[in-house]
Image 1: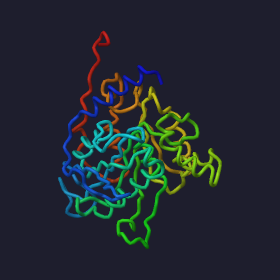
Image 2: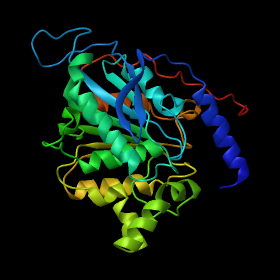
Image 3: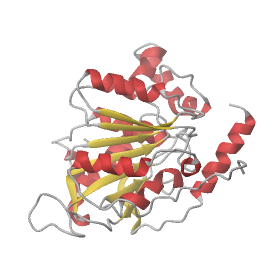
Image 4: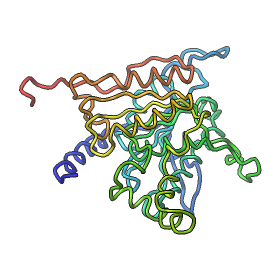
Length: 322
């Protein structure tokens, strides 16, 4: 990537990161790994909690759960990354209990540590769902960039709980009922590995490629596409067709693989969209992806709630392009 493009992307992401949103609960500890606390932020649902059960109504639960997974090139970012945490702005008003998670970062913690962390977050939220008046059987993963890879991977692994675990949290399943991935890698086999990915995968490749298999096989084992099967949850891929890092083929390859085993996978294409959600509201003719995404989640999780609050206003471009 050219230096100018990198600079433009950084400015865009920094601008989004400066958006202010205040969690209902900040820094909730969902686990401890290698002596450090793993934390997440919680955004309480503000909209309708309508559902099929008796006694449910406006503002009542149990609410469906959205677990947001931030990007940052596998080595940076936090739960407050604006490009991903932005979805809390419109999912919480739509009646979702939203959790935005932190995870351990490369190069100190390369693949697969962050996968373990996100699985732990799913288990913890499921185990404690009643605390937040949330539904443990309606969990959606929503990740962007590196977090999109993690939503793809955790969603496709469908990890069961360990019935013999001493910690009751680890007895819970890490399975999701829906997955939304924004500008996300579905495989490392078909796209040249950049510096960020090397930081993330090289220790795994060195260990697995030498100890058990070839480098190609090690890369394949770290790729979400490898784990597609008929029991996977439905997927929604959202991606700009001018993304600097992720080609549209990453979404269509996953869609093709899921369709072959009879699993739903839909794609929302953002014409002219770059990497990250920050500039999408300024694109002429861009789809109302936030509404479409919320509608899609509502249908998959059998939820009814108001849609619209918290969505970024569309900004019309001036006639002269300025």
